[in-house]
Amino acid sequence: MPLHDWTKVDAGIFHDFHHAWIGELRNALNGGLLPSEYYALAEQVTRPFGPDVLTLQTNGNAGSEGGTRGSVAMLDRAPKVRVTQKSEADLYAKKANRIAIRHSSDDRIIAMIEIISPGNKSSRHAIDELLDKVWSVIDQGIHLLLIDLFPPTPRDPQGIHGLIWGDAAPSQPADQPLTSAAYQASVPRCAYVEPTAVGNALIDMPLFLDDAHYVEVPLEATYLAAWRGVPQRWKAVLDG
Image 1: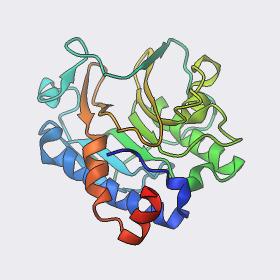
Image 2 (image 1 turned 180 degrees about the horizontal axis):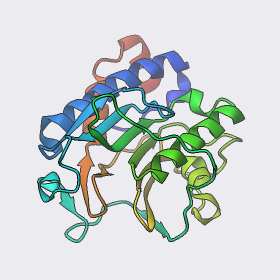
Image 3 (image 1 turned 30 degrees about the vertical axis):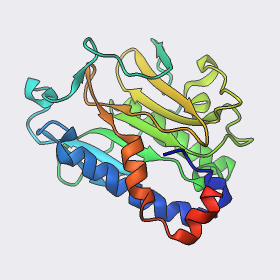
Image 4 (image 1 turned 135 degrees about the vertical axis):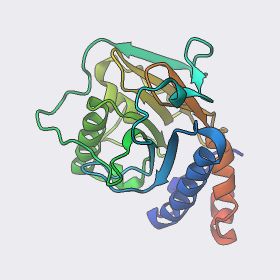
């Protein structure tokens, strides 16, 4: 299904779709995509980050070989994105204050999925808060998948990846202003970026479980499943 132009509707309509998509992503991850030692939870608020989907590893299995069964090894198949970047520098250590992130179950947080909302770009303060959260998460070794279906603003003229990666990021293609970006919280830091545009289909994106293994998140299939529940009134606006 081609991506829709979500700037045609107000933030509340996207917020409703956003919630549906989160549920579909959670279902896909828990429905056999993740190895058995991992599980996903939707919208668990952790401090300072309130991610859409958390991927956790059951207590006591951190670093075990069994934790990667069913995932893809980097040596076997690299993620199929157009832009791959590595840096030996600690690109994310932008702030001196860092807050440890914990989960109430005491199971270890491995990765997060975040779908950018209009509110994340609504002001300089909102953008700065998002960046602080991203840097804090990756500094702590938590892998991150960001999905941004909104075009750049004056506050992120090179897109959200340009803000996160800094001057080393490639220019955002003018005809592909939307972005999916997977960040591997390893040393060196790695970014796997796929620019896209309204009218394109989403590609599957990697969600890393450790430095060498990832699962492919079915963005297109889950987007389509969430789209089915959008009211006809708003489908007509977005399709039009």
